[in-house]
Length: 272
Image 1 (spheres, one colour):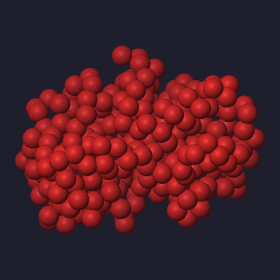
Image 2 (cartoon, rainbow, N blue to C red; image 1 turned 45 degrees about the vertical axis):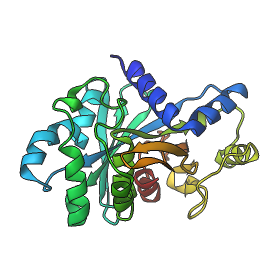
Image 3 (tube, rainbow, N blue to C red; image 1 turned 135 degrees about the horizontal axis):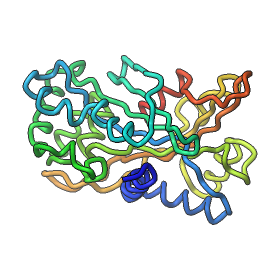
Image 4 (cartoon, rainbow, N blue to C red; image 1 turned 90 degrees about the vertical axis):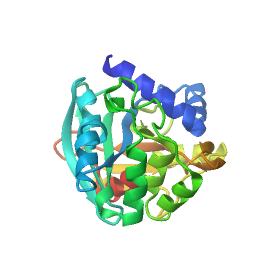
């Protein structure tokens, strides 16, 4: 599988689960834009310190390093690390050898920092993952490898949105981010956001719609999550899925384009 084929498979899975992404993508392409992605963000569980036996059995299949291996084999190189203690997450981003290929962000929930109840609920899910699932070529778009009740989902949601999302959807893409600098019909991120609102899309305006600034070399906005029906063991319920994000990067004094994530945006990348 090539990098382009991997990204295409991830996009198809993501767009199927996040209807607004396909809708906005179509809206922009019909306007004449040729969209390029700035980055793609995945989520997973971190099992270190949770249960020695469980971590030994699945840590090499579903942790941040395990997910990254298939990307590194296709040309993505590790860059900065991030940590948000209030959300119990760590993350890293990877940059591809081809500058036209989107960056990769993987965030990992540090399960051992959660309550005993949340740890037990997550461990119960992980124990039902089929052996070898993480090594499957389609593991990142095969859907969740476990059954879960809505009651368990609600319990996790009370403590960690990240944990609840993973329980409902499994490993895979939480959001793609459009490279606003590659757009030809919008002068800035504000104009793009106004266009989306005009066409009925809802943006995440917690703390302001646009995070970051030109002075920080990066601006970013995102939609509010879609709400889609999810089948739980105790019924089908509509719950929030992924978002669609938009990033505008600026050049450093050296003339090089800024590639990282400023603190405020790194926190949003991990939490939206």
